[in-house]
Length: 371
Image: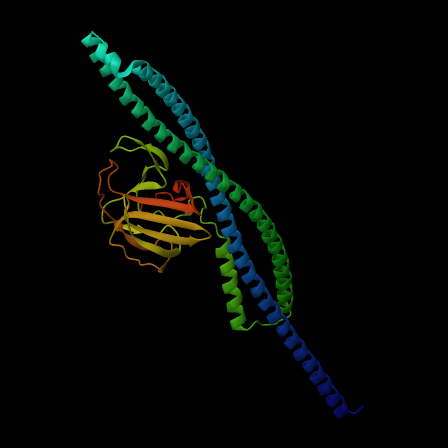
C-alpha cells in the first residue's frame, strides 16, 4: 500500500470510529435521559404514596383516639345507666311506700272526718295526707326524670357501641390499605433504584442529561424528601416566641374558676407586641377569633398535622397563604381574663383529631433567638 493509500485508510478508519463513538454517545445520552425520566416518574409516585401513607397513619391515629374516647363514653354510659336504674328503683319504692300510707290515711273517707270527735287528730291527719300527696307527686315526677335519663343513657350507650363497631371495621380496612401501601412502596423503590443505576452507568460513559430533565428530577427528589419528613422530630419545631412554657399540656386546675380542666396545648410566655412565628412550613387555613383563645392562626402542615397559635394581635397572614418555618404570623396580644400566667401565646398541635403535646418537639431556648 502506498503512502497515500495508508493515509486514506487511516482517515476512513478514524471516521468510522468517530461515527461509532457518536452513535454510542447518542445512545448513552438517550438511555440516561430515559432512565432519569423513569426515576422522576417513580419518585413522583413514591411521594404521592408517602402522602397517602401519612394520611392513612393520621386516620389510624385519629380512629385510635376516637376509640379511646368511645371506650370512656361506654364506661360512663354503663355507669350512668346503672346509677339511674338504682335511683329509679329507690324512688319507685319510696313512692309505693308513701302511696300505701296515703291509702291508709284515706280509709273511711269523708264520713270518718265527719264523725271523728278529735279535731286535732283530724287536722293532723289532713295535713299529713296533703304532705304525702305532695311527696307522691314529687316521686312520680322524679321517676319520669329518671326514666327519661335512663332512656337517653341507653341510647348514648347503644350509639357508642355502634360507632365503636364501625371504627373497628374501618381499622381492619385501614390495615389492609396499609399492607397495599407498603407493597407498592417496595415495588416503586426497587424500580427507582434500578432506573438510578442505569442512569449512573450511562453518565459514567460520558452521557449528559438535558437541563430540563435534571431540574425535574431534582424537584421530584425534593418533593419526596418533604413527603417523608416527619413534623414531630425532637426539637424540630420553631419556637413561636422566645419564652418558657408556663402552662403545660394535660390536666390542671383553672386558677379563676378553681375547677379541674384540661389543656390541649401549651401556654408559652411572651412579651406583648413581640413577633409570633410559624412552628413549621404550612398553609394558612383559618384566621379569626376563638372564644378563650382570642385571635388565632391555624396552619395545615400536611400529612394530617395542624397547629393552632392563639392570643395574637396584628396578624400578618391570611387564609390560603403559604408560610415557611419561622415566618411571622402575628404579635403577642393581651389576655381578656387574667389567669395568673401573664402574657402568653397558646400553641396546640393536632394529628388528625388527636391533640399532641408540642413541648418535646419545640426548639430549645437559645441565648439570642426565640426559635
